[in-house]
Image 1 (tube, rainbow, N blue to C red):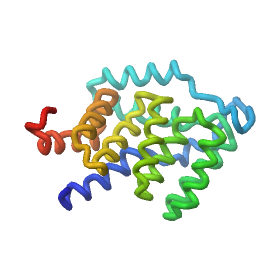
Image 2 (image 1 turned 180 degrees about the vertical axis):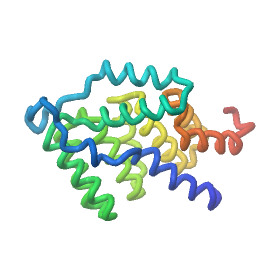
Image 3 (image 1 turned 135 degrees about the vertical axis):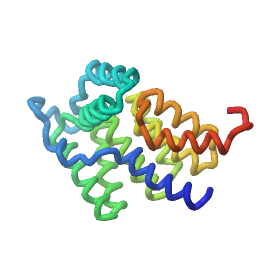
Length: 203
């Protein structure tokens, strides 16, 4: 993989798996209250599915940007003060480049809230940065089991598959991300580059 493409992938990773900071969304558990550590309140799946449908269908970049942020904010909302606090500490540890500590916090999140897709997605990012690609892809797969149209996880899957040298699989993942979010620029650029690289290989 060339140096330019490697630098591109590093930038793409930050877009794909660290989409937006949690600062403004964390600590806002609304009226749900605590349900116990093992029972976090899920976001309204019908509302999120409606937003995702609109995102897939829009042909306007500004509308797509608004829908993306709304969806990301909904996905981040765990409904639990405990999980929100752990996620805050995870992000803070990542910003200090203390990945082992961030991993400890994210381990606690997925243990306490196994149905919280963003917990798995965040840990997948940390594992990727730790170059533990095998476990990272497992967490991405769990994210997609919980939220099949998670465009960040799909884009992240493409990056991980590239690390395994699976360019065809990576291209499929980026295309899946673009089916959900047609204006996901990092996935678009990755797909365009890979189409050139794998041309004539049966894609």
